[in-house]
Length: 183
Image (cartoon, rainbow, N blue to C red; front, side):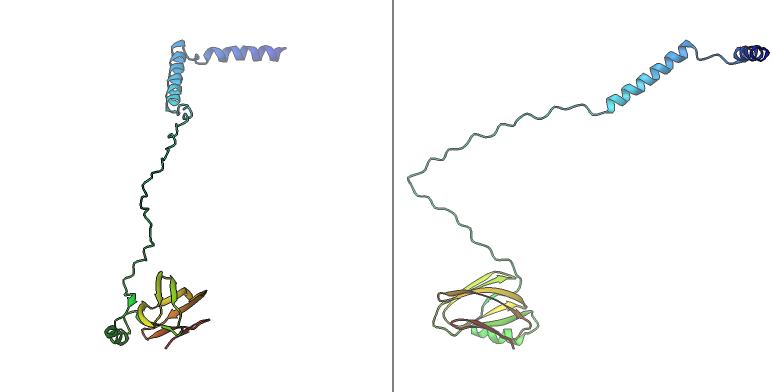
C-alpha cells in the first residue's frame, strides 16, 4: 500500500507542475482554422454536373420529285500528280527520250499484235488507262507497275512489269496473253 500511496502522491505532484492545456480561446481559434481550410478544400473540388438532355434531332426533309429531269454530277477519279511525263510520244520525242536515259523516264511501246481493241489500265503506282487498236509509245517513269487489260472480249488479264532503266521496254498484246520485253 505504501507503493500505491507513493505513486499517487508523485502523480499529483507532477500534474501540478505540468503546463496547463490549451485555453478556451486557443481551442476555438484552432477549430476556426481547421474549418476554414476544410471549406477551401471543398470549394476546390469539382461540383456535380447533370447529364446533358436529349438534343433534338432535325426533322426529316421530304424531297418532292420534280417532273423536270435534272443533271447529276459524276465524279471521275483524278490521277495522282507526277512530276515526270506520262503520256503519248510524238515521233520526234522518241529520239530525245531514248537519248536522255538519266532523266528517270523510259519509253514503253504498247505493241498490239491483235486485230482487237485493247484496253489497258495501269493500276499502280499511278492509275492510267489506254484504249487502242494500233501500237504506240508512251513515256513512263522508272518504277514497278501492275496492270489489268482486256483484249477484245478476253479479260481481265492481270500482270506486272518493271521499268528498270531509260531504254525502250515493250508490252506485247497477243490474243490470249501479254508479254513484257525489256532491253
